[in-house]
Length: 317
Image (cartoon, rainbow, N blue to C red; front, side, top):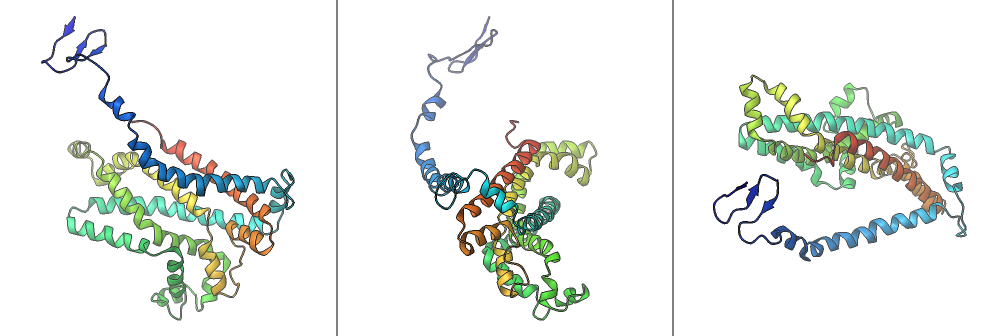
């Protein structure tokens, strides 16, 4: 039996087959899929990815498994850098920094985004988003230079707070034990605002019907945030984790500038990227530097895989 809708609309029969009311034919989406305009838009990005992403990565792989003479070295370069007395302290520094930073992003970014989204006064919400985003307008190096003054009790606008914490000089503030927290604060200050804007946009995509239904059922603001908004933000939180992890493993600018400003109170091999820089440009050992880069790449990919799978980043709704 065939159900006959008004003329011009598709007809559906009980066998589950779909027929066109006007002669059938190829679905219109298929013709659009073959249009070359999509390839035209994607091609610049693809070319840049190949030139500045894939090719350098392949060259790094080649360097990591060869010696200075170009001969095959196996895992000798990896053994050398892992056995370096500077390697494991750098791993500890970067790991501690990442834990503090990622935890701060998870708690404060999502929390502040929920607060901004809950503000019903439009101009207040817009002002808050603008204020949050302002620090991200500074480039990484400029931001660190600004923080050099903030961290100096003799010139800082928060010198009273630093004094209350027992810091009387710049050298005391930037002791190696304090650096993971300091770098996490700098990274949060410069990057959290952009993520708050992204999370705010994600919250706007949640259907208002769902929120209103929860309110009718008696859910308060906290229950709505915990049981509706946060689960629906899971993919966005996973995306933030992947991107922040990729940026965090490349810690370089902050310790490098602090090392120069503090006359080596901060070591110039504090992070893994700094250690790779030392290998490449101080020891002229590009093979060892490439080995460190590959180790960072593999670790970042594995951790990103955890974020993707746990966050359901590629799951279909």
